[in-house]
Length: 111
Image (cartoon, rainbow, N blue to C red; front, side):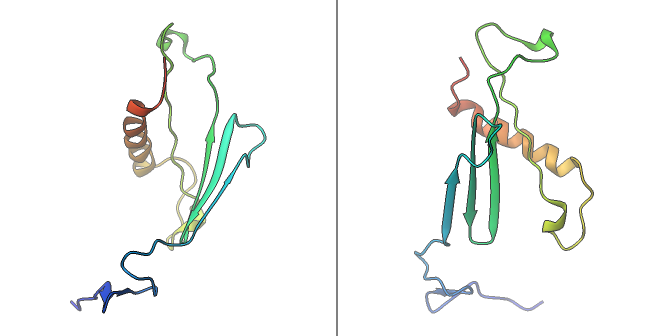
């Protein structure tokens, strides 16, 4: 197997220096129905994030009177990979949603 060097003479394959970031673009308030939203581009990665809530929790037996529940849903566009992805959540999307929620819970004010 051929070894590919990611950095040659201090320059990355895409022409950036070791200490240079990819070009970034951020827009806020892109979705009218969301309570908060943004669009983020970093290199070829494009992300849309939306916040809805707080809202009443259903099913009601999961509600806690003094604390909100954080829910995260990761979804990758079906056209974003070479092998077309079936729409809807797959095992990978469910796992990334769970890991994202666990990473955000300590820093999001839910009380």
